[in-house]
Length: 355
Image (cartoon, rainbow, N blue to C red; front, side, top):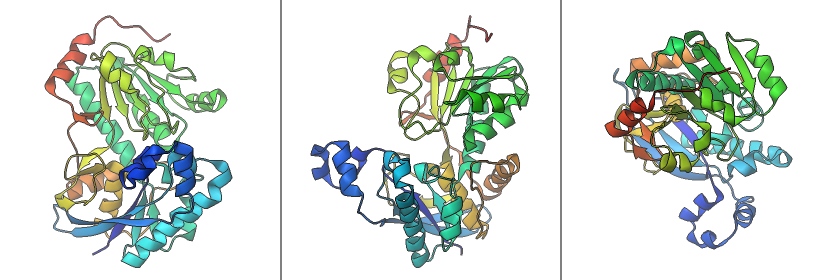
């Protein structure tokens, strides 16, 4: 049996107060200052992952005491690398042979390349299967809302990142137009020139032209608001922290927002840790790590700032082989029911056309 590990970390400073309630009275900066000298910690032992082939694996969550703000601070890049490598060393001591980098531990610096060079075990960011499930979720939602892909416009927010680029490359040939939204216009325009019928923007207002929005930025804050979306739009939010404002759920019932990358794990998995998902489901990045362990592939898989189409297709193949499936839609930590689907479908009427 090949064992795995996965790095988890607080998405907000306030998340640390769940374990240490006394921290709840402090401002975020103070909480982060207290976290800075902390070492990674064992979080839980994961059991019950069983492939439909009969193969089994087990693993460990390792807690990284850093928030996205801390991880993305360029003045603390060395500390971030050191802490993530410590997570891999702890996992190695527990018997793991591959480790997945969760959330912003996969984004920091060079996307796991430096960590892999220093790690005693194989490393993956999980971004290949994250792309696969984002696309799968978007296409499934399009079918449910009767969106005709050849006449539709798709937007990718965070389009120059590793996940965004590959989502755009795979989907652009299937749609009428692609809107690429990034922070650096020149960089985004350069990528747009590589795709068929694509244009670049730095203004979220342009999302009002999109039938489907896949948002995968590392903005660390809400950037998609109710006024940015057209009636009946489908929004797949892969980012953590979320890119889509909670206001969308309250003010735009005509829009279908779904969380990207929620996967049903085969077997009777017990994570012994609550990360906000229903039992026996996980993030796609976690699932990629489990699939590689089930395959006995003790190798670096998804690293760096680019995810190849071939890697995405390989994770689709592994998911089918082992029984990992896209779970039911969730939106802002709640299950999406048929009423939400019907409202969004009915809202698809007169809509603006991309210039």
